[in-house]
Structure formats: structure tokens, C-alpha cells
Image (cartoon, rainbow, N blue to C red; front, side):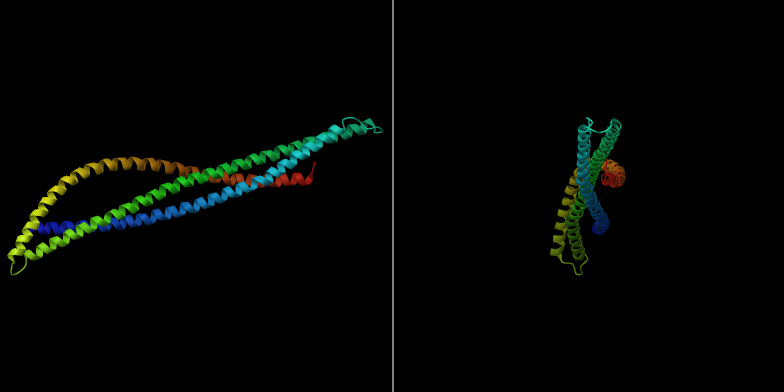
Length: 269
């Protein structure tokens, strides 16, 4: 019968389409899971950068405190020498004052530089933390995509089972119709099944029309959401290299600062 042949072809085509769709979704899922893994690795590196940046702050703060102490010490020496002691020639006393003033100026310069390096290190920590937050957003988006794909794959299984059951039923009907000799009771049962199936198909057609309308509305919303996420990810993609460059520059500046402060402390006033 043409109807059974058409139904068989339709069901077989639908099963093949489902298989192809599942294959595509599985490939997509693999790529998405790899993206999640890569983003998690990137977050680990970013957290390591935060820890390294934070570890540099205490030594720089200690150096700044030591530089402040040297300023206070030099200022006290200058204050103590504000009056010439007995027996010291005025020229020698003035030379001593000039040397003490230079010492105070040098100590203040070193202290200012040390505090600037502390501020710069704190800014480096803030930049590294911002990079971690940006990667967190990327991980959340990638994980959401994985969940959506997994849900889509899971939703295919009931449909596959339904189509396979329908195909088995159609093949059974066709076997009874083509049986030789014919069995009247079996044919009557097939006729009843065909009648019920026709009614079910008509009802399904009506339901499918309503579902199509709902699906089109949902698809429009999802497309809008995808556009928003694409814009967000594009923005993050441009921010991450900049943050990495800033973090690298901060690390170089901190290294130079550590060397400079160390040299100043070793040389003394």
C-alpha cells in the first residue's frame, strides 16, 4: 500500500536525520567540553598570577616601611644637629648640615619610590583579579553551552524510540497485508490499527502546528540571547589579551622596582 510505503520511508528518513543530528551534537559537545577545559586551565593560570602578584606586595611594603624609618632617622639627625656643638668651626658645622639635608632628601626620594612600587603592585593584583573574573564569565558561558547540548542529545532518545516503535508497527502491518494466504482476523486488526493511526496522525498534525508556532517564538528569543552572548564573549576576548599584557608589564615593573628598592636599601643614605 502506498500509505505504508510512504510511512516507512518517512520514518526511516526521520531516524536517519536523528542519527545525523545526534552525531553533529556529539561533535559539538566534544568541542564545547574542550573549551571548558581550556578555560579552566586559563583560570588556573590567572589565579596563579594573582597569587604571584600578591606575594610581591609584602616585601615591597617592608621595603617602604624601612625607607620611612630611614627618613625619620635622617630627619632626627638633622634636628639634633640644628645647633652647632661647642668647639666645632662654623664652616664644618655648615658642611655637616648640608650633608644631613642631602641624606634626608635622598631618604625621602627612596621612600617615595618604595611607596609608588607598592601602589603599582596593588594595581597589578587588581588587574590579575579582573582577569580571573573575566575567565569565570567565559567558563560559565561555556558550561551553559555544554549543558544545553547535553540536554539536546538527551531529548533525541525518546524521539528515536518513538520513531523506531512506529516503524516496527508499520512493518508488522505490511507483513500481515502481504501474507499469503491472508488471515482475515489479522487484516481486520491491521485495518483498526490503520484507522487509529490516521486519527493519531491528524491529531499530531494539529499539535505539531501549535508546537511549531511556540518553537519559532522560542527560537527568536534564543537567537537574540545568542547575539547578546556573542557580543559579551567578543568583548571579553578583547579584554583578556589587554589584561595579560598589563599583568606582564606590571610583573616587569615590579621586578625592576624590587631591584631598585633593594639597591637603595643596600647603598644606604
